[in-house]
Amino acid sequence: MKKICIIYTGGTIGMVPTERGYAPRKGYFSQALAEIDELQKPEVPDWEMVEFDPLLDSSNVAVNEWNRIGRTIRDRYDDYDGFVVLHGTDTMAYSASALSFMLDGLDKPVIFTGSQIPLCMLRSDARDNILTSLMIAGEGKVREVCLYFAGKLLRGNRSTKSSADRFVAFDSPNCAPLANAGIDITYEEGAIRHFRSDRKLRGPLGMFGGRLRLSEFQNTPIGVIKVFPGIQFRLFEQVMTDSLSGIVLETFGAGNIPEADGALLPMIRKAYENGTVIVVCSQCPQGTVHLGAYEASAALVGAGAVSGYDMTTEAAIAKLYYLFSQGLSRDDIKHYMEIDLRGELTK
Image 1 (tube, rainbow, N blue to C red):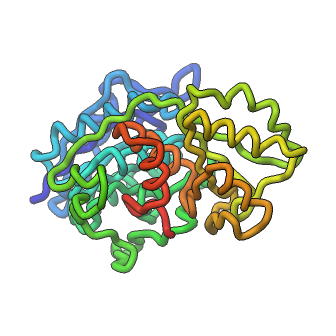
Image 2 (tube, rainbow, N blue to C red):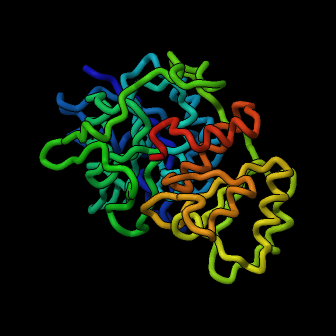
């Protein structure tokens, strides 16, 4: 019998109605799970639950909370065959991306899930999401950080929230689902990333392979700028100081930027000279960045930017936090941003 640890961090899934809207209630959720008959059936892995105190609204989840989730998994890693993390949907893709980098040498399933409607409500999607996540974690065929929602198992660092009001709330535009849950749970063998020691990586990251190692994130100053028609880049000059360690630039299409009176490139060069790592991602959900494919993007290379290829913004942010937390040089960080470390990009 497999044994799974459910880590209940908070979110809609465990909330109850109050006079001020839905809110978590301490101690309620563990009793609610115990009353679900399906979770007690012999086909379901044995499970135990850890409840965070205080419970978190996912809008408030950031670096410190990612570290806390990571420590919870690390401290119990040898006691369980897998983990199911119950989390609010708003920032679930960010957290799944962060944990995928944070858990060096992971060789067990870590499945993020939640719900659009609280478990206590009649039409809740929580029961299926919890039950199927437990089954997937117990089978152990996918041994990485994943996100399960509405019949789809997605790679955590390829996921993004695509809907605020549909049951199908998440998408993975540039990576096929790892499994589909219909009458049976069908795994897509070609999409599954099989465990390998990170020692196979060349360079300073190679030392962390083998057993699980938690790489906690530091609160590194990282920003995001989304390019739009008519953007006045001069308004962002005050942000581009030597205290900004990394920035994700969301560009048009394959990495294109407007001329904007020539204000952007000098600003990026200044950021580069200050030691800021600039990563170019696309605003398009699907597709990849090709810096230099068009004249409108070639200048970014000369200004010191690196390509995020088909990474989501969530993954690019998490990866920057991870690499800066390793104490790497700027050149090493730029190098590894363009290297696939956890299945986060297709080069």
